[in-house]
Picture 1 (cartoon, each protein chain N blue to C red):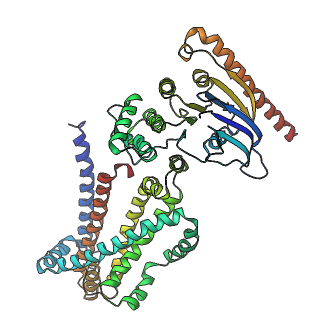
Picture 2: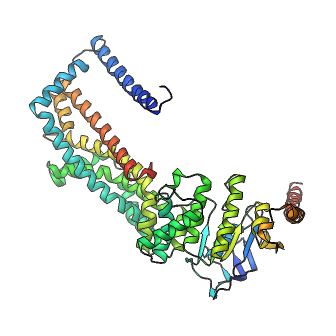
Picture 3: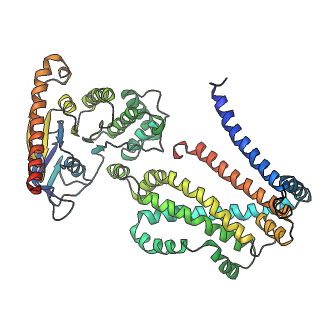
Length: 256
Length: 263
């Protein structure tokens, strides 16, 4: 019935599904209306066969695995470095005024500017791509961790002092957990900056990967494959974000 | 040796030019419940943070149990108005952290002790709830349990019930009195609510500023259990009037001062 909680759930999902159907419908209609040259603007009915073809030939799986490896490895490196670096910068003024200032400067460099440097230092292999993803993931996580540690609520710091905690105990029991909600927000931004960096890296000197496929298909004028690649990247980004939020809700229900 | 607080010639200012405390003297007996009231910004909270050791005096001495100007420690626990529970811990986790880290109890012991305290503050069955799942009153109950869990000699309370509704506030006052009776210790309590002060304290101190000085002090020897009764009403009225007059007098002086400046 309408008052049942499940009804609300179903209704909310129905809104999403109906909206997406509308988007796809509009996309298909635009494609068929010939308002724009169809080969420049392939619709869902043209993209789907291309996607199936890519899946059947194994091309899709290969690209997916190549991109996933780079993304996951780089993302883990970036966040694992970003959190402690940020926390230390936030709590220790000396570090913040020295290394923190340097990192602040580096963080404002547009991520694609780093691609030539990465190619110069690491060549065109996996190291170059992973390092670019790590670079992209690092800064939002570092910045949010630093801000969180810097602005730990005064009262919580005071409780730690009243308990006579050692610096290590304070870090473990107060500063780190109280920073988690901010770090979660930083990681969500890092998910998209890492994806951006990966796409940029794969579009400039790669031989596999989902973004490479988009770029290559564009060069070959296979616009249907190009759109299929973009579609896959979009769905994957959404899935990663969704899975991350589910994980946070499960591990730290107080952090969202 | 528990001897309470003895403050001598205390000087403190947030800036060099403004001295919030200038040779201020004060005494709190061991086991006494003292309430401080006064206008917003007169220095009550600052005084509390000085007592906790969270702020450092410029000169003068704060003696607590024979220690001179002691740094913050588990013998003096501060309860704030703002909700400052560990939001990443359950109600039980919030209470148990102190005993575990301060008294180095085992997980099992601290858990048992904390469960008893949570039950004592009326939160049986809510051990596994996170602060965001609890109401404001329940969160302050956890805060009380967390404070008493480290068995401090003094509890410093900065408007702890300030954000609660009237009904919950009365419940919390009763609870505080009961638990305090069991655990003893000194309490320095800050409030703007004069009725709350009358219900709770052995002594009410009205602060004026600035520099901070004691405008009046009222001792209330009557039994706390009787203070909510009808026979106590005239006495309550009298005390309230006295405090209101003291606070009102300063307000009037301020307005006159403003007028003079404008003309």
